[in-house]
Image 1 (cartoon, rainbow, N blue to C red):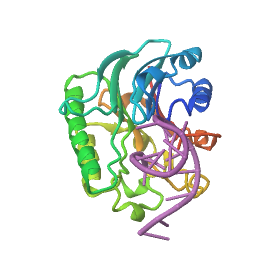
Image 2: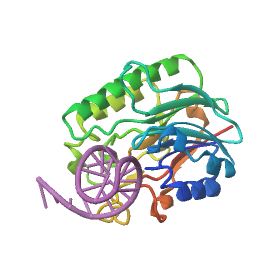
Image 3: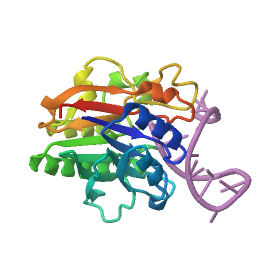
Image 4: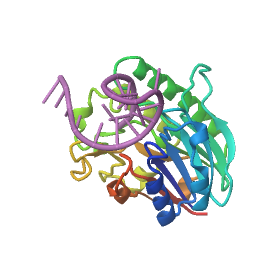
Length: 257
DNA sequence: ATGACGCCCTAGGGGCGA
């Protein structure tokens, strides 16, 4: 079973690229972030035409997350994280599909830092940690996939020294991510490719992609049940080179069935 | 230090991303 995550940066602007990628690589389950579309403008028909069912949580202009599945309709378990009734941003959706609980998340960016956006990022992180702990306690196989907006280590940025003041690389942000991992999650891509510089994002400026000036900020975290089922993991880097591409590339894991 | 690009929308420039 192949499970993928892809920050599309606008699902309607990205539709031709998304449909081509789905058709060519046929992942079984897909987490999407940054739909940048209200719920009623989700292109369900086009996605169904290439063989996928979907659940999604949209929002006008910003954010927005979805879970796609081939053939089987995902069963929605929750949308949003508990712990802040005033949080109206669409950044988390969770479903049961193919016997796995899949959490799809878009963690806040946090820039400019310091400031209210970093505060929101850190409090969202705390809420995610709390929810992730309950998922582990529930004793079901879980994948937590998405855009974490964290550069975990120096290996994960083309020029780490340039990111020291940035909300993606601040010590407290990296620490929050390490605390999450320490609950018992496995970063699937790093498990398979221990020492390789592998990126999932290249900005649109300065020919970043052709220079391979990228970051690794999108991951799939596996619960302990799933770690022994991990077969391989990778990034569909070529998709970033397609015309009208997102600034992120899809990331995937292959698990035994 | 800034801006480069590309998405969104009260559609023209401004906000936001990372």
